[in-house]
Length: 163
Image (cartoon, rainbow, N blue to C red; front, top):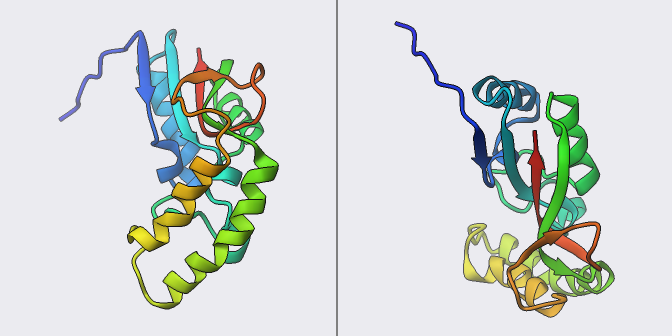
């Protein structure tokens, strides 16, 4: 039995891309293109270097169900390489990256200790450093989505508008 999919004018894919194995990303984006051949795609993902500041110490993304977390340039590159033209890159939760990484180095021992204790990734002590990072290095207390190129700081979350 074949399912006939109707094409769409637009598709929103929030916080999905990082959950797809890297080798499956081209197929995922091609499927979105087939569903939306002439329309717009709004797709978001965490900004890898900021979302997983402990990456080098922990050997991978902070969230265990993330396969790949892209930085802004990688996000644009993977979308354009797979058939989407990026119109604009937006961000949310802008932080001062220097301050952010200085604080991350200080807070990393808390995560290391929690992991040695066998606490799950979502335990409040494991999550505490990330929560503090977002608050202490934030350039604003707003959750507004803003253009990346017009803002000071770096966003923790990326949102891309494509066609």
